[in-house]
Length: 313
Image 1 (cartoon, one colour):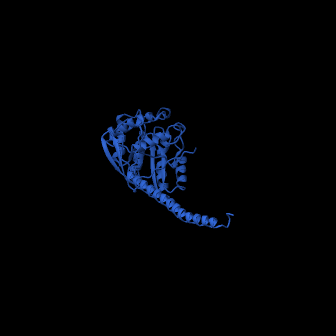
Image 2 (cartoon, rainbow, N blue to C red):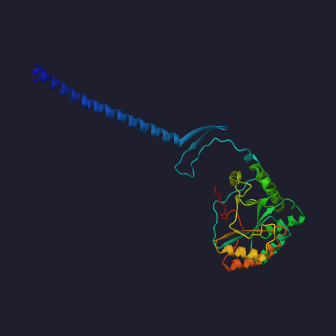
Image 3 (cartoon, rainbow, N blue to C red):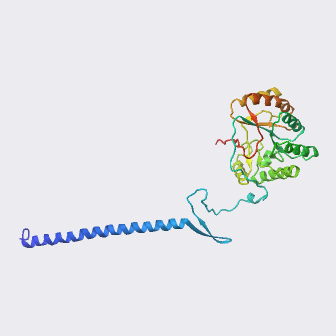
């Protein structure tokens, strides 16, 4: 009988000894493999970190090294992208953006679109009498006359800011493509410099940055103009004088002063084109009313924090 025999117990003893040897050995092998795997993973991680610290890139000019850094401002990211065609246009159409922007509460920026015209001179007279500086976003098509050239020079000479509005003011043409917008912009840019010796750094989109004509292209235009360093300004106050129908001076004045009560600072849209006589008539009352509300006045520069329209999908 095998069960309970000497042979049976002999086999049990031998089996126990085998287990006592195999189990620890197996555990050692298992943990040894895991340790080796962990060490290998750690080595690979170190190699990857080392690779990230120094990347060697071959470009058209030869070998160069890009050193990685934890400082986000110093980190260089490489992107192989093909430049858009319009980015190659007008290589002199660039300006330098300021490092920071200013935001001053209780400050009003009077801005006038669509000039110069004979009304621009009247507005300049009123501003001079009140020792106030303003901003003029100019349209230059059909304005290249000795009188209008003299007007632009006066704007600069008296300490106001000239910004670009448009050459043609033809919305359908301007917003037909990024190329078309740049072409229109460049004509004004060159003309203003030719007349005044000043390169404009700020601009205002005809109809504002978001309008019914530029829905399919405004993002690309804004991106390109930002890339070139230019700053655009919409508005958060409007005189209501854009209409072809002439608005009464008292209505323009009341509109501006009413809006001023609900803003901490204001960029005011007005117009100095031909037939805007009532805007001229309202200006003195607007200035006095805003001063009574505690506002001061300043011209826009590219250091002033802009007002931008927000697109709603």
